[in-house]
Length: 84
Image (cartoon, rainbow, N blue to C red; front, top):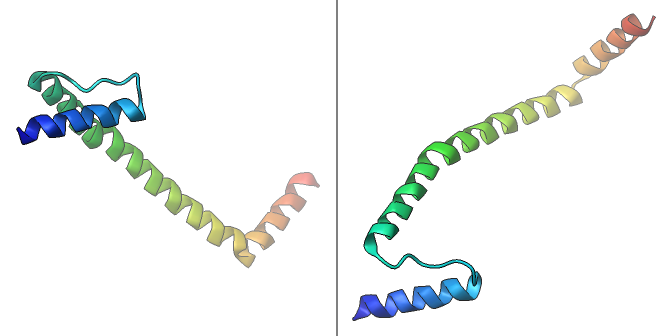
C-alpha cells in the first residue's frame, strides 16, 4: 500500500516538473534505467570530473605563473627577441 502511494506521488511530481517525461511502468524498465544511470556515473561523469580537476589545477598554476615577476621579465625578453 505504501509503495503505491509513493509511486503515485512520484508520478505526479515528475509530471508537474516535466510534463513530457514518464516514470517507467514496470520493474524491468526501472532497473534498466538505474543501470544506465550507474554506468553514466562510473564512466562519463568520472572522466569529466577528472578533466575538470586537471583544468582547475592548470588554471591555478597559470594564475601563479602570470602573477610572478619571472613571467613578466621573460615575456618582455621574448617580445623584444621576437619583434626585433
